[in-house]
Image (spheres, one colour):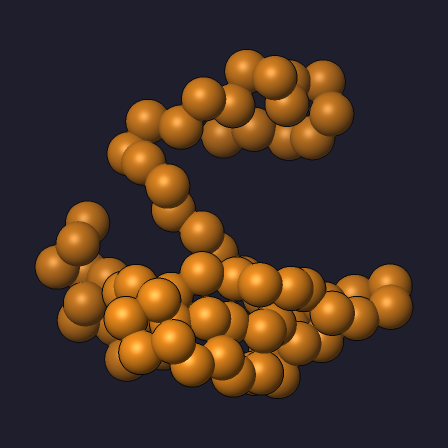
Length: 69
């Protein structure tokens, strides 16, 4: 999976970076990102965020709240 992500030109990997804030009204419009290595923050105009925190995430607490695959 890692090699597929790295090969995809539409995916931006941002190591050392955390999301400080998500902004928008009824839909996501911007994210504020913080790079822990450089200490800098930046705002990016985006409509979607995909976060992967592990290959086998604990999602059982979401069952019944949204569709799981």
